Length: 289
Image (tube, rainbow, N blue to C red; front, side, top):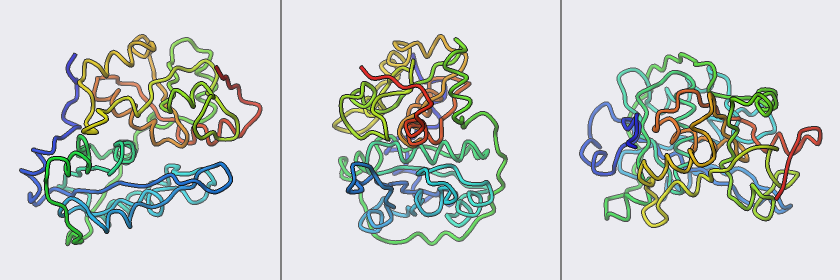
């Protein structure tokens, strides 16, 4: 099956042709999860990586400093709308602009910011297929210059239902109509390896489509739509009335949610705090194996 909403994904050829359009705002969304020295992970801004090289004309969307809620101890949580609107306005995103989002890794950081923009009602946002990796693989130029876009007027129109919380996930586990879907690796899902978040394994009775399995390992572009559709159908997402994706902190989960949206799933949410919250609470059910 073809993507129902291919308009949210743009190719490197398209961006190269439109890079100098006056309404285009390209944002490098790269961030990093780094070992914290005690078996866990910490969030690190990708601003230094952006400063070293980026697609010409692109700014940096700083998920760690600008686009996360600093009033909670969970990483990357969606902040209040005024904070988001101010940040995107500063990046030059808003009325009359189109935002093209990419990162230098697997695409999950770009899709996280795409999902945030969707949650606050901005629909002129697109993810660059293959990101910086594919751009460079094709021999396209990079530079270190900062963009000269001034601030814009960003009017947020928040949408309900795109972010899920712990109580909604817990209720969904027994309702029979919701597919709760883990975007972490198979090893993390089974509890046999990879980072854990206090307890190994997965939210009980959930299925697994790793975000890392959505892309071609050579180009980092997404797999063909037919293959992606089959991955989600195989775990029963196509039979559900609603899909809630989760991971460690809402990043890889946004990648799964993005692909589900491209495929035409209309009722998709991201569990924002994900395993960072769930695994730390011993009262919440988990499984391994």
